[in-house]
Amino acid sequence: MSVTYRDVKADILAKITQGELPPGSAMPNEVDLAVDYGCARATVNRAMRELADDGIIERRRKAGTRVRMAPVRQARFGIPLVRQEIETLGATYRYALVARAALAAPDWLRARLALEPKARALHLTCMHYADGMPYQHEDRWINLAVNPDAEYNDFAETGPNEWLVAAVPFSNAEISFQAVTADAALAEYLGCGTGEALFQVERMTWWEGRAVTFVRLTHRRGHRMTTQY
Amino acid sequence: MSVTYRDVKADILAKITQGELPPGSAMPNEVDLAVDYGCARATVNRAMRELADDGIIERRRKAGTRVRMAPVRQARFGIPLVRQEIETLGATYRYALVARAALAAPDWLRARLALEPKARALHLTCMHYADGMPYQHEDRWINLAVNPDAEYNDFAETGPNEWLVAAVPFSNAEISFQAVTADAALAEYLGCGTGEALFQVERMTWWEGRAVTFVRLTHRRGHRMTTQY
DNA sequence: CAGTGGTCTAGACCACCAT
DNA sequence: TGGTGGTCTAGACCACTGC
Image (cartoon, rainbow over all chains, first blue to last red; front, side, top):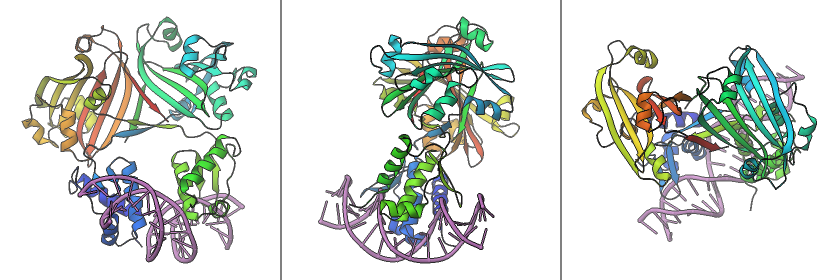
């Protein structure tokens, strides 16, 4: 069996975690490493490229490769559909449409999504339940200029997120997390007290430079978002 | 100029975003694509592999490659050091140690970090200020069995996070986000009202299977964590 | 079983950039 | 300007897995 890029990557990573290659230290060049490991340079290259992508090492032409002083700590989060999220918990998912209205986009939304004046938008309010208990409150705006079909969908059975995923092939997005205080309305929807701290996700989605949708997802009391890295 | 893997990746991605390759559709195999694009199979392979890593397409031996039905939505978050985070904002950073005590690890911590009975830990409480205003409250526990040197550091000038980054070469971690309600102590430290909603990050760090540290970072009122993807 | 992706190789050219 | 990483090529073998 020949030496794989996984072997090389694991070995180098071990040398780093065990302090044999301390932060800031320079590493041999690819040609030398290839000789050491008895493999092709391309194999070393792939191992090193992945370590660089992972933020463990830093590479620069001519300057060579060094172990990062402070590893770039980054984490990947999956952004699940609510339905999947709930069903993964082993709970039964239920969706409910609370309100639906097509109207002129309010000023704050126009500003936030860079919509043209007089843009029309579809405003939806929905609830997602896990085993009958409130799980997530969804407050969504859909840009009707980009998604005219949305106006002919009543969203009574299926949530707008699932519809959008199917309708918009691929898109860029900005996501942000914050803590908010439950106002009277949210407290009632989510079955908690007014003033409770709730975890909220906001997401803006774009398709070929044009705003598709803006959504504010407020989770039930005590919700946590977790990941490993 | 030859065809680069970036060219191939961009072209395929364009075909997907423009609906030419709709979700769920099968794509040609690598050999055919290489002929189409007039490049080597390895070039196509790298383009496709990156698209798969990005969650755009799905690849299986023998079954071939298809555009994902629902793109795997995932986001990468940078986990910055507080100092960097604040200085990036253009503000002046200040650190203050509030409390420091070496003691037997409390039961909940032993359970959470899987520490041995009678494990000792260093408990630190710190504050981080941006332009003199409270920015983040840090409540940290360091496992003295793994980091005995920590006991001889008074952490008066430098925060434990910066020390740990330098002392522990590399590590695995679990991170979680949630919203919490400010109790009297937090409210006072962060200069907000009792009962306010605050954004909190918890992180557990491991080195070679052993717990290194547990930290609870509570941000000032209104803090947002944002990323693009 | 046979088609597809996963990976390695040996060699080559080139862009970048520290010195 | 020379060393280093970035990438492409053409060919090869193999692991996986749907048929």
